[in-house]
Length: 186
Image (cartoon, one colour):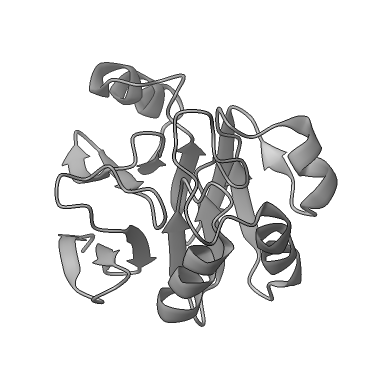
């Protein structure tokens, strides 16, 4: 099993394509934790901001997507993306794991995420929204935030995605291919 995990692309087609081509090749699934197309009024638009091209990349992908609706995603986005944008939670059951993805703006702190993960019996709880990475196990749940490949708010400014396999979840710097964090699942 290989699952690409991405969030907060905010319409940056080039950065999205870079992340997918480098890290998600051969994946069984890509989970996007929201803020897919629109840049949001608090985010600076960068050079490859092209929501229409990003929608085309998603629509043409041979790898299936599961998308959780972010606070910057709107109904019009669903008109151009063929994959359902699920709100407020997207659920995946794969290889005996219950994976829940949400953008994170409705469950912002760890206590709220812990409560929701317990309520939904999530083995893996994926969120985005904060544009920084999180990879930790609390209780019976692994919490993942892949950061952002296009509008990082990490202290070091690194653009990131995550990859989940049967054995581990790794967070990668998409420019250097460096593994920034890893959590073994077995």
